[in-house]
Length: 475
Ligand SMILES: Cc1ncc(COP(=O)(O)O)c(C=O)c1O
Image 1 (cartoon, rainbow, N blue to C red):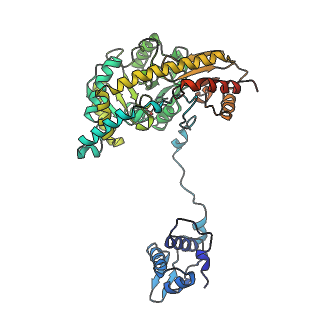
Image 2: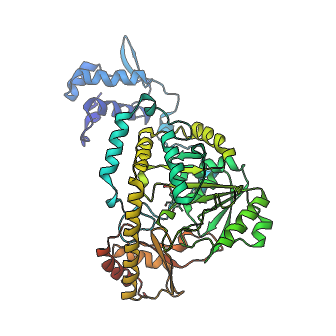
Image 3: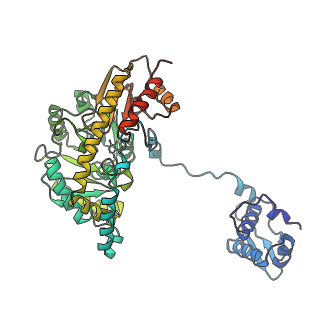
Protein backbone atom coordinates (compact mmCIF):
# COMPACT_ATOMS: atom_id res chain seq x y z
CA UNK A 1 0.00 0.00 0.00
CA UNK A 2 1.42 3.39 -0.97
CA UNK A 3 0.91 5.85 1.80
CA UNK A 4 3.34 8.52 0.58
CA UNK A 5 0.46 10.97 0.24
CA UNK A 6 0.26 11.09 4.02
CA UNK A 7 3.16 13.52 4.12
CA UNK A 8 2.76 14.97 0.64
CA UNK A 9 3.32 18.71 0.33
CA UNK A 10 2.20 21.32 1.00
CA UNK A 11 3.40 20.70 4.53
CA UNK A 12 2.21 23.40 6.91
CA UNK A 13 4.98 25.16 8.73
CA UNK A 14 5.21 24.90 12.49
CA UNK A 15 3.27 21.60 12.70
CA UNK A 16 5.58 18.88 14.02
CA UNK A 17 5.86 15.85 11.74
CA UNK A 18 4.32 13.44 14.25
CA UNK A 19 1.31 15.71 14.72
CA UNK A 20 0.88 16.08 10.97
CA UNK A 21 1.05 12.33 10.35
CA UNK A 22 -1.48 11.75 13.12
CA UNK A 23 -3.85 14.44 11.73
CA UNK A 24 -3.66 13.16 8.15
CA UNK A 25 -4.14 9.51 9.14
CA UNK A 26 -7.09 10.46 11.29
CA UNK A 27 -8.69 12.54 8.53
CA UNK A 28 -8.25 9.66 6.06
CA UNK A 29 -9.91 7.22 8.47
CA UNK A 30 -12.82 9.58 9.16
CA UNK A 31 -13.52 10.38 5.51
CA UNK A 32 -13.26 6.72 4.44
CA UNK A 33 -10.05 6.90 2.37
CA UNK A 34 -8.70 4.31 4.80
CA UNK A 35 -11.63 1.94 5.17
CA UNK A 36 -12.52 -0.15 8.21
CA UNK A 37 -10.41 -3.32 8.38
CA UNK A 38 -7.56 -2.03 6.17
CA UNK A 39 -4.19 -3.13 7.53
CA UNK A 40 -1.58 -0.41 7.83
CA UNK A 41 2.13 -1.08 7.27
CA UNK A 42 4.20 -1.73 10.36
CA UNK A 43 5.73 1.33 11.97
CA UNK A 44 9.24 0.47 10.80
CA UNK A 45 8.11 0.01 7.18
CA UNK A 46 5.98 3.18 7.07
CA UNK A 47 8.80 5.19 8.63
CA UNK A 48 11.18 3.96 5.93
CA UNK A 49 8.68 4.71 3.15
CA UNK A 50 8.05 8.24 4.41
CA UNK A 51 11.67 8.87 5.34
CA UNK A 52 10.88 9.75 8.95
CA UNK A 53 11.79 8.37 12.37
CA UNK A 54 10.00 5.23 13.52
CA UNK A 55 9.06 6.93 16.79
CA UNK A 56 7.07 9.47 14.79
CA UNK A 57 4.93 6.73 13.26
CA UNK A 58 4.58 4.95 16.57
CA UNK A 59 3.32 8.16 18.19
CA UNK A 60 0.63 8.61 15.53
CA UNK A 61 -0.47 4.95 15.68
CA UNK A 62 -0.62 4.93 19.48
CA UNK A 63 -2.65 8.12 19.57
CA UNK A 64 -5.15 6.76 17.04
CA UNK A 65 -5.41 3.45 18.88
CA UNK A 66 -6.17 5.40 22.07
CA UNK A 67 -8.91 7.28 20.22
CA UNK A 68 -10.43 4.08 18.83
CA UNK A 69 -9.62 4.88 15.18
CA UNK A 70 -7.04 2.05 14.90
CA UNK A 71 -6.86 -1.40 16.41
CA UNK A 72 -3.54 -3.01 17.29
CA UNK A 73 -3.13 -6.75 17.71
CA UNK A 74 -0.51 -9.42 17.15
CA UNK A 75 -1.01 -9.26 13.38
CA UNK A 76 -0.33 -5.52 13.31
CA UNK A 77 -2.41 -2.37 13.02
CA UNK A 78 -5.74 -2.00 11.19
CA UNK A 79 -8.43 0.60 10.79
CA UNK A 80 -11.27 0.21 13.30
CA UNK A 81 -14.97 0.17 12.42
CA UNK A 82 -16.23 3.55 13.53
CA UNK A 83 -19.59 4.05 15.23
CA UNK A 84 -20.28 6.83 12.72
CA UNK A 85 -20.24 5.97 9.01
CA UNK A 86 -17.21 7.64 7.39
CA UNK A 87 -19.27 9.74 5.02
CA UNK A 88 -21.33 11.08 7.97
CA UNK A 89 -18.12 11.99 9.75
CA UNK A 90 -17.21 14.51 7.06
CA UNK A 91 -20.70 15.96 6.54
CA UNK A 92 -20.96 19.39 8.19
CA UNK A 93 -22.26 18.76 11.69
CA UNK A 94 -25.85 19.72 12.46
CA UNK A 95 -25.79 21.28 15.89
CA UNK A 96 -28.84 21.66 18.09
CA UNK A 97 -30.27 25.18 17.72
CA UNK A 98 -29.14 28.06 19.90
CA UNK A 99 -31.50 29.16 22.65
CA UNK A 100 -34.22 31.52 21.37
CA UNK A 101 -32.79 34.31 23.49
CA UNK A 102 -29.52 34.17 21.54
CA UNK A 103 -31.17 36.21 18.80
CA UNK A 104 -31.75 39.02 21.33
CA UNK A 105 -28.07 39.97 21.42
CA UNK A 106 -27.72 43.24 19.50
CA UNK A 107 -24.49 43.71 17.66
CA UNK A 108 -22.55 46.70 18.94
CA UNK A 109 -22.90 49.86 16.84
CA UNK A 110 -19.16 49.49 16.18
CA UNK A 111 -16.10 47.96 17.77
CA UNK A 112 -13.84 49.83 20.14
CA UNK A 113 -11.97 52.47 18.17
CA UNK A 114 -9.71 55.34 19.07
CA UNK A 115 -9.43 58.64 17.29
CA UNK A 116 -11.68 61.36 15.93
CA UNK A 117 -14.64 61.16 16.68
CA UNK A 118 -15.21 57.83 18.47
CA UNK A 119 -17.93 58.56 21.07
CA UNK A 120 -17.77 57.39 24.67
CA UNK A 121 -14.05 56.64 24.47
CA UNK A 122 -11.77 58.08 27.16
CA UNK A 123 -8.33 59.43 26.34
CA UNK A 124 -6.27 56.50 27.58
CA UNK A 125 -3.08 58.21 26.36
CA UNK A 126 -3.49 60.51 29.37
CA UNK A 127 -3.99 57.65 31.81
CA UNK A 128 -1.80 58.19 34.92
CA UNK A 129 0.36 55.15 34.22
CA UNK A 130 2.99 55.87 36.89
CA UNK A 131 0.57 56.42 39.75
CA UNK A 132 -1.43 53.33 38.75
CA UNK A 133 1.72 51.21 38.46
CA UNK A 134 2.73 52.37 41.95
CA UNK A 135 -0.64 51.28 43.36
CA UNK A 136 -0.42 47.93 41.57
CA UNK A 137 3.10 47.40 42.94
CA UNK A 138 1.94 48.13 46.47
CA UNK A 139 -1.09 45.85 46.03
CA UNK A 140 1.13 42.98 44.88
CA UNK A 141 3.51 43.54 47.78
CA UNK A 142 0.63 43.48 50.27
CA UNK A 143 -1.11 40.55 48.56
CA UNK A 144 -2.10 37.58 50.67
CA UNK A 145 -3.07 34.20 49.21
CA UNK A 146 -6.75 35.12 49.52
CA UNK A 147 -6.29 37.97 47.01
CA UNK A 148 -5.45 35.38 44.37
CA UNK A 149 -8.70 33.53 44.97
CA UNK A 150 -12.18 34.75 44.15
CA UNK A 151 -12.85 38.27 45.38
CA UNK A 152 -14.75 38.70 48.64
CA UNK A 153 -18.57 38.72 48.15
CA UNK A 154 -19.48 42.25 47.04
CA UNK A 155 -15.83 43.16 46.44
CA UNK A 156 -12.68 43.81 48.46
CA UNK A 157 -13.63 45.66 51.67
CA UNK A 158 -10.94 48.33 51.05
CA UNK A 159 -12.47 49.24 47.67
CA UNK A 160 -16.03 49.25 48.95
CA UNK A 161 -15.00 51.60 51.77
CA UNK A 162 -13.04 53.88 49.42
CA UNK A 163 -16.00 54.06 47.04
CA UNK A 164 -18.51 54.81 49.83
CA UNK A 165 -16.31 57.73 50.90
CA UNK A 166 -15.76 58.93 47.32
CA UNK A 167 -19.50 58.83 46.56
CA UNK A 168 -20.27 60.76 49.74
CA UNK A 169 -18.03 63.60 48.55
CA UNK A 170 -18.82 63.50 44.83
CA UNK A 171 -22.49 62.49 44.80
CA UNK A 172 -23.64 63.29 48.33
CA UNK A 173 -24.54 59.65 49.05
CA UNK A 174 -24.69 58.53 52.65
CA UNK A 175 -24.10 54.82 52.24
CA UNK A 176 -22.43 52.09 54.25
CA UNK A 177 -19.61 50.25 52.39
CA UNK A 178 -21.79 47.12 52.51
CA UNK A 179 -24.19 48.87 50.13
CA UNK A 180 -21.44 49.14 47.50
CA UNK A 181 -21.17 46.02 45.32
CA UNK A 182 -18.10 45.84 43.09
CA UNK A 183 -18.89 44.46 39.62
CA UNK A 184 -17.08 43.76 36.37
CA UNK A 185 -18.38 47.05 34.92
CA UNK A 186 -21.90 48.27 34.19
CA UNK A 187 -22.65 45.31 31.98
CA UNK A 188 -22.24 42.86 34.87
CA UNK A 189 -24.15 45.22 37.17
CA UNK A 190 -27.13 45.25 34.79
CA UNK A 191 -27.11 41.49 34.54
CA UNK A 192 -27.19 41.23 38.31
CA UNK A 193 -30.01 43.80 38.59
CA UNK A 194 -32.09 42.09 35.91
CA UNK A 195 -31.81 38.76 37.70
CA UNK A 196 -32.36 40.03 41.24
CA UNK A 197 -34.95 42.76 40.71
CA UNK A 198 -37.27 41.24 38.09
CA UNK A 199 -38.63 37.90 36.98
CA UNK A 200 -38.71 36.37 33.52
CA UNK A 201 -41.02 38.18 31.13
CA UNK A 202 -41.49 41.29 33.30
CA UNK A 203 -41.28 44.68 31.64
CA UNK A 204 -38.10 46.73 31.54
CA UNK A 205 -38.22 50.28 30.19
CA UNK A 206 -35.23 51.35 28.17
CA UNK A 207 -34.50 54.77 26.75
CA UNK A 208 -35.11 55.23 23.03
CA UNK A 209 -32.62 55.91 21.52
CA UNK A 210 -30.49 53.96 23.97
CA UNK A 211 -27.37 51.95 24.62
CA UNK A 212 -27.58 48.63 22.72
CA UNK A 213 -25.31 46.68 25.10
CA UNK A 214 -27.60 47.53 28.02
CA UNK A 215 -30.66 46.45 26.04
CA UNK A 216 -28.92 43.17 25.29
CA UNK A 217 -28.13 42.58 28.97
CA UNK A 218 -31.75 43.07 30.02
CA UNK A 219 -33.34 41.20 27.11
CA UNK A 220 -31.03 38.22 27.47
CA UNK A 221 -31.80 38.05 31.17
CA UNK A 222 -35.39 37.33 30.16
CA UNK A 223 -37.04 40.75 30.43
CA UNK A 224 -39.54 42.21 27.95
CA UNK A 225 -38.11 45.52 26.74
CA UNK A 226 -40.37 48.51 26.38
CA UNK A 227 -38.64 51.44 24.63
CA UNK A 228 -39.63 54.87 25.99
CA UNK A 229 -38.94 57.96 23.87
CA UNK A 230 -36.31 60.47 24.92
CA UNK A 231 -36.82 64.20 24.24
CA UNK A 232 -34.82 67.29 25.17
CA UNK A 233 -35.48 66.73 28.89
CA UNK A 234 -34.56 63.04 28.86
CA UNK A 235 -36.84 60.00 29.08
CA UNK A 236 -40.42 61.11 28.44
CA UNK A 237 -42.90 58.37 29.39
CA UNK A 238 -46.50 58.97 28.30
CA UNK A 239 -49.63 58.09 30.26
CA UNK A 240 -50.00 55.07 27.96
CA UNK A 241 -46.49 53.88 28.82
CA UNK A 242 -47.40 53.93 32.50
CA UNK A 243 -50.86 52.40 32.06
CA UNK A 244 -50.26 49.78 29.37
CA UNK A 245 -46.65 48.88 30.20
CA UNK A 246 -46.13 49.43 33.92
CA UNK A 247 -42.41 48.85 34.47
CA UNK A 248 -40.79 46.41 36.80
CA UNK A 249 -37.44 47.96 35.87
CA UNK A 250 -36.54 51.32 34.36
CA UNK A 251 -33.02 51.64 33.04
CA UNK A 252 -32.02 55.26 32.65
CA UNK A 253 -28.96 57.54 32.37
CA UNK A 254 -30.35 60.70 34.05
CA UNK A 255 -27.07 62.65 34.23
CA UNK A 256 -26.27 62.28 30.55
CA UNK A 257 -28.54 60.21 28.39
CA UNK A 258 -26.65 57.92 26.04
CA UNK A 259 -26.55 58.58 23.17
CA UNK A 260 -28.69 61.75 22.86
CA UNK A 261 -26.68 63.61 25.53
CA UNK A 262 -29.76 65.06 27.27
CA UNK A 263 -29.99 65.61 31.03
CA UNK A 264 -33.13 64.38 32.83
CA UNK A 265 -34.87 67.44 34.29
CA UNK A 266 -35.65 67.59 38.00
CA UNK A 267 -39.47 67.43 37.52
CA UNK A 268 -38.97 64.31 35.36
CA UNK A 269 -36.74 62.77 38.05
CA UNK A 270 -39.39 63.27 40.71
CA UNK A 271 -42.19 62.03 38.42
CA UNK A 272 -40.18 58.94 37.51
CA UNK A 273 -39.55 57.97 41.12
CA UNK A 274 -43.18 58.54 41.93
CA UNK A 275 -44.43 56.46 38.98
CA UNK A 276 -42.02 53.58 39.58
CA UNK A 277 -42.95 53.53 43.23
CA UNK A 278 -46.60 53.15 42.23
CA UNK A 279 -45.88 50.42 39.67
CA UNK A 280 -43.93 48.45 42.30
CA UNK A 281 -40.74 48.54 40.28
CA UNK A 282 -37.13 49.64 40.45
CA UNK A 283 -35.07 52.28 38.69
CA UNK A 284 -31.55 51.35 37.61
CA UNK A 285 -29.61 54.60 37.39
CA UNK A 286 -26.69 54.25 34.97
CA UNK A 287 -24.33 57.08 35.94
CA UNK A 288 -21.63 56.13 33.48
CA UNK A 289 -19.96 59.50 32.84
CA UNK A 290 -21.34 62.21 35.15
CA UNK A 291 -17.78 62.67 36.46
CA UNK A 292 -17.32 64.89 33.43
CA UNK A 293 -20.29 67.17 34.12
CA UNK A 294 -19.82 70.80 33.07
CA UNK A 295 -21.38 74.15 33.75
CA UNK A 296 -21.94 73.71 37.48
CA UNK A 297 -22.63 70.71 39.67
CA UNK A 298 -24.53 67.79 38.16
CA UNK A 299 -28.17 67.47 39.21
CA UNK A 300 -28.56 65.24 42.27
CA UNK A 301 -28.62 61.54 41.42
CA UNK A 302 -31.91 59.67 41.56
CA UNK A 303 -30.33 57.45 44.20
CA UNK A 304 -30.69 59.38 47.42
CA UNK A 305 -32.96 62.04 45.88
CA UNK A 306 -35.59 60.74 48.27
CA UNK A 307 -34.71 58.58 51.27
CA UNK A 308 -36.76 55.54 50.29
CA UNK A 309 -36.67 55.85 46.50
CA UNK A 310 -36.66 52.43 44.76
CA UNK A 311 -33.38 53.11 42.96
CA UNK A 312 -30.17 51.19 42.48
CA UNK A 313 -27.20 53.10 41.14
CA UNK A 314 -24.40 51.90 38.92
CA UNK A 315 -21.07 53.55 38.15
CA UNK A 316 -18.06 52.46 36.13
CA UNK A 317 -14.34 53.09 35.75
CA UNK A 318 -14.58 52.49 31.99
CA UNK A 319 -14.79 56.21 31.19
CA UNK A 320 -12.70 57.63 34.02
CA UNK A 321 -9.79 55.13 33.90
CA UNK A 322 -9.93 52.58 31.07
CA UNK A 323 -12.58 50.15 29.79
CA UNK A 324 -10.33 47.08 29.92
CA UNK A 325 -10.05 47.40 33.70
CA UNK A 326 -13.57 45.87 33.85
CA UNK A 327 -14.42 47.34 37.22
CA UNK A 328 -17.59 49.16 38.18
CA UNK A 329 -19.96 49.16 41.11
CA UNK A 330 -23.55 49.13 42.22
CA UNK A 331 -24.94 51.10 45.14
CA UNK A 332 -28.08 49.53 46.53
CA UNK A 333 -30.46 50.28 49.42
CA UNK A 334 -29.32 48.70 52.68
CA UNK A 335 -32.10 46.11 52.60
CA UNK A 336 -30.77 44.69 49.31
CA UNK A 337 -27.06 44.71 50.14
CA UNK A 338 -26.74 41.15 51.38
CA UNK A 339 -28.75 39.64 48.52
CA UNK A 340 -26.67 41.52 45.94
CA UNK A 341 -23.32 40.63 47.51
CA UNK A 342 -24.30 36.96 47.83
CA UNK A 343 -25.73 36.63 44.32
CA UNK A 344 -22.80 38.49 42.81
CA UNK A 345 -20.37 36.13 44.54
CA UNK A 346 -22.08 32.98 43.34
CA UNK A 347 -23.14 34.18 39.87
CA UNK A 348 -20.00 35.99 38.78
CA UNK A 349 -17.34 34.35 40.99
CA UNK A 350 -15.67 37.74 40.77
CA UNK A 351 -11.93 38.17 40.91
CA UNK A 352 -9.36 40.91 40.32
CA UNK A 353 -8.60 41.14 44.04
CA UNK A 354 -5.23 42.77 43.29
CA UNK A 355 -6.72 45.36 40.90
CA UNK A 356 -9.45 46.08 43.44
CA UNK A 357 -6.83 46.68 46.16
CA UNK A 358 -4.82 48.88 43.79
CA UNK A 359 -7.92 50.87 42.90
CA UNK A 360 -8.80 51.39 46.57
CA UNK A 361 -5.27 52.70 47.15
CA UNK A 362 -5.50 54.86 44.01
CA UNK A 363 -8.70 56.47 45.31
CA UNK A 364 -7.49 56.85 48.90
CA UNK A 365 -4.23 58.54 47.86
CA UNK A 366 -6.22 61.13 45.92
CA UNK A 367 -4.90 60.00 42.50
CA UNK A 368 -8.43 59.37 41.27
CA UNK A 369 -9.80 62.84 42.03
CA UNK A 370 -6.61 64.46 40.70
CA UNK A 371 -6.98 62.48 37.47
CA UNK A 372 -10.68 63.39 37.20
CA UNK A 373 -9.92 67.10 37.71
CA UNK A 374 -7.27 66.98 35.02
CA UNK A 375 -9.41 65.07 32.55
CA UNK A 376 -12.40 67.32 33.20
CA UNK A 377 -10.27 70.33 32.15
CA UNK A 378 -8.85 68.46 29.18
CA UNK A 379 -12.25 67.27 27.92
CA UNK A 380 -13.76 70.72 28.38
CA UNK A 381 -10.97 72.21 26.24
CA UNK A 382 -11.56 69.51 23.63
CA UNK A 383 -15.28 70.11 23.56
CA UNK A 384 -14.65 73.83 23.12
CA UNK A 385 -12.14 73.13 20.35
CA UNK A 386 -14.67 70.91 18.61
CA UNK A 387 -17.40 73.56 18.86
CA UNK A 388 -14.99 76.19 17.58
CA UNK A 389 -13.95 74.03 14.61
CA UNK A 390 -17.58 73.27 13.78
CA UNK A 391 -18.30 77.01 13.82
CA UNK A 392 -15.22 77.80 11.69
CA UNK A 393 -16.44 75.43 8.97
CA UNK A 394 -20.20 75.76 9.26
CA UNK A 395 -22.18 72.75 8.12
CA UNK A 396 -25.76 71.76 7.40
CA UNK A 397 -26.61 70.66 10.96
CA UNK A 398 -29.68 72.23 12.47
CA UNK A 399 -28.43 72.07 16.04
CA UNK A 400 -25.80 70.79 18.47
CA UNK A 401 -27.02 68.89 21.52
CA UNK A 402 -25.41 67.29 24.55
CA UNK A 403 -22.16 68.42 26.05
CA UNK A 404 -23.46 68.93 29.60
CA UNK A 405 -21.40 65.91 30.62
CA UNK A 406 -19.47 63.07 29.08
CA UNK A 407 -17.36 62.85 26.00
CA UNK A 408 -19.49 63.58 22.95
CA UNK A 409 -21.71 66.08 21.13
CA UNK A 410 -24.71 65.36 18.93
CA UNK A 411 -25.20 67.14 15.59
CA UNK A 412 -28.81 67.14 14.40
CA UNK A 413 -28.99 66.71 10.62
CA UNK A 414 -31.57 68.07 8.22
CA UNK A 415 -33.83 65.50 6.52
CA UNK A 416 -31.90 65.99 3.30
CA UNK A 417 -28.83 64.30 4.76
CA UNK A 418 -28.87 60.77 6.15
CA UNK A 419 -26.76 60.09 9.24
CA UNK A 420 -25.79 56.57 8.10
CA UNK A 421 -24.60 57.90 4.74
CA UNK A 422 -22.45 60.54 6.41
CA UNK A 423 -20.97 57.81 8.64
CA UNK A 424 -19.88 55.76 5.59
CA UNK A 425 -18.50 58.78 3.73
CA UNK A 426 -16.61 59.97 6.82
CA UNK A 427 -15.08 56.51 7.22
CA UNK A 428 -13.62 56.88 3.70
CA UNK A 429 -11.70 59.89 5.04
CA UNK A 430 -10.59 58.05 8.20
CA UNK A 431 -13.10 59.82 10.45
CA UNK A 432 -15.20 57.79 12.88
CA UNK A 433 -18.67 59.11 13.61
CA UNK A 434 -21.76 57.24 14.72
CA UNK A 435 -25.31 57.57 13.46
CA UNK A 436 -27.86 58.24 16.19
CA UNK A 437 -30.40 56.27 14.14
CA UNK A 438 -28.40 53.10 14.85
CA UNK A 439 -29.22 53.42 18.57
CA UNK A 440 -32.97 53.86 18.06
CA UNK A 441 -35.74 51.25 18.12
CA UNK A 442 -38.95 51.73 16.08
CA UNK A 443 -41.02 53.87 16.05
CA UNK A 444 -38.36 56.38 17.10
CA UNK A 445 -36.70 58.06 14.14
CA UNK A 446 -33.39 59.84 14.61
CA UNK A 447 -31.05 61.52 12.18
CA UNK A 448 -27.99 62.88 13.98
CA UNK A 449 -24.29 62.32 14.33
CA UNK A 450 -22.44 61.44 17.52
CA UNK A 451 -19.07 63.15 17.71
CA UNK A 452 -16.80 61.94 20.49
CA UNK A 453 -14.06 64.39 21.40
CA UNK A 454 -12.61 62.34 24.31
CA UNK A 455 -9.67 60.81 22.46
CA UNK A 456 -9.01 63.76 20.07
CA UNK A 457 -6.13 66.12 20.94
CA UNK A 458 -7.03 69.77 20.32
CA UNK A 459 -4.36 70.06 17.64
CA UNK A 460 -6.12 67.40 15.55
CA UNK A 461 -9.63 68.79 15.90
CA UNK A 462 -9.62 71.22 12.97
CA UNK A 463 -8.35 68.70 10.46
CA UNK A 464 -10.82 66.05 11.64
CA UNK A 465 -13.73 68.52 11.34
CA UNK A 466 -12.54 69.56 7.86
CA UNK A 467 -12.72 65.92 6.73
CA UNK A 468 -16.07 65.47 8.40
CA UNK A 469 -17.39 68.51 6.56
CA UNK A 470 -16.36 66.89 3.30
CA UNK A 471 -18.43 63.83 4.26
CA UNK A 472 -21.39 66.06 5.10
CA UNK A 473 -21.62 67.67 1.69
CA UNK A 474 -24.74 66.62 -0.18
CA UNK A 475 -23.85 63.62 -2.38
C1 LIG B 1 -24.64 54.20 28.62
C2 LIG B 1 -23.43 53.48 29.05
N1 LIG B 1 -23.41 52.91 30.27
C3 LIG B 1 -22.33 52.26 30.72
C4 LIG B 1 -21.19 52.12 29.94
C5 LIG B 1 -19.99 51.43 30.49
O1 LIG B 1 -20.13 50.07 30.50
P1 LIG B 1 -19.05 49.13 31.19
O2 LIG B 1 -18.88 49.61 32.60
O3 LIG B 1 -19.67 47.77 31.12
O4 LIG B 1 -17.80 49.25 30.40
C6 LIG B 1 -21.17 52.67 28.67
C7 LIG B 1 -19.99 52.48 27.80
O5 LIG B 1 -19.97 52.69 26.63
C8 LIG B 1 -22.31 53.37 28.22
O6 LIG B 1 -22.34 53.93 26.99
